[in-house]
Length: 341
Image 1 (tube, rainbow, N blue to C red):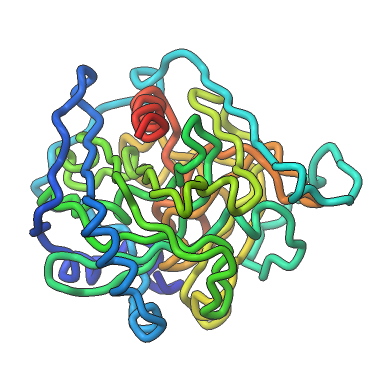
Image 2: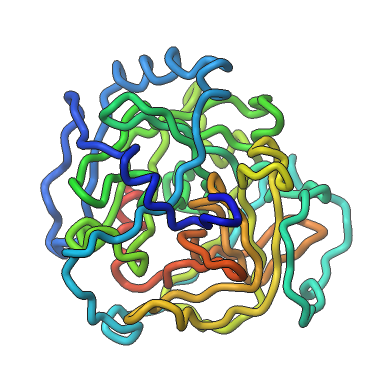
């Protein structure tokens, strides 16, 4: 998304298409919300071969689709997606810990934040990364994602519109994650999606951003899970308090953000999304552009360590703010399914 178009782009609708191919969506679980699509080892091997450096460079930044005019109204509120709180702490493996002293939290600024290059390293520089995938029409796109601590140590949080076409329910293919991506480099290698998880509500609502959340369970490499290879994982919280001071990270595609070739950072105190009827999202006064979709919103962030707790993913934006879906009970169940994959 460019500043003139933001993350909501009608043009992106034309780029999306129905999914084809042998990957099969798993049966709906008891909650009737979690949708899982599995990819065979052969499909994952082909995805690794497919994503050459030239194809990475040709991928376009994905933007959230505008909801179709005929989309059913969503009357859900934050309270009817509530439930038990789940708090999963971050993990940093001993061989990756920094020596910088811990701090309580980055001081609060009352000023609007503009995206700035992240130059402080730490765990976020290894757990944030770029996602690449192909739609049914053969068009190539890129988003952002973040490693979330989980039972299988192989889960990333991203946006729903980086996983599935909200108009058709078609799941994207050749889905890979490159942690620590920087100017074409793959410092920790390339990981393929074993399973992708999205919410039924995101598709049935034709792309309502309240449900624009997704997880991917990634295949191990040489028997080692993703978090072990990158040195840790960010924490994650569900049904957590809102209105907190947060930090966001993504690979925005504008020239000011490095054309998607570097990790950028914003920070600020969360405020409600009052611009969309029925919205339960929260955001900050900062705008990262297309390609940042799916990137992290982190609370309790320790800048010297690059460690925090995920409370959402970048979904949509306006001229002055970017917003994340609230991680409620539906997202909690989605995460648990990904953690078991």
